[in-house]
Image (tube, rainbow, N blue to C red; front, side, top):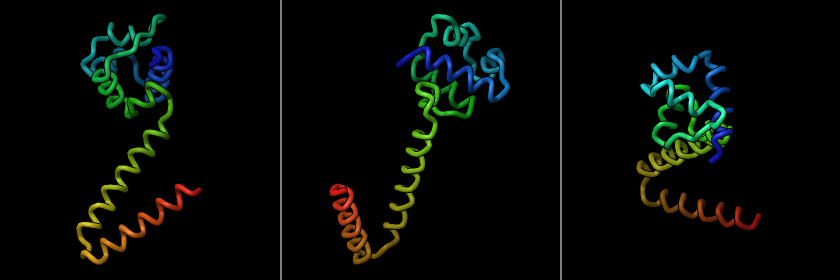
Length: 115
């Protein structure tokens, strides 16, 4: 992981939300001096728990702070949500319909592998 990317993306998130480092410090409970280390010339990378706290306060994902790729993280969240919805629907089906969905899923997977 690159501290410079984190620094750039953190600065961008702060700017887009109109927050100062001091305000982020108050919101997260992370010392301003610690946050300054992530934004300074040496641009160190925070531990995962601190990055998660910063991301939550800024309304972005840790992936965005680390890589700048918010869309990939959102796609992953959407996929997980869809899987949960599919599972919930499967629970409500009878066994015959579950078998139909299973057959359909296997067919779709085979088609994807051939493509």
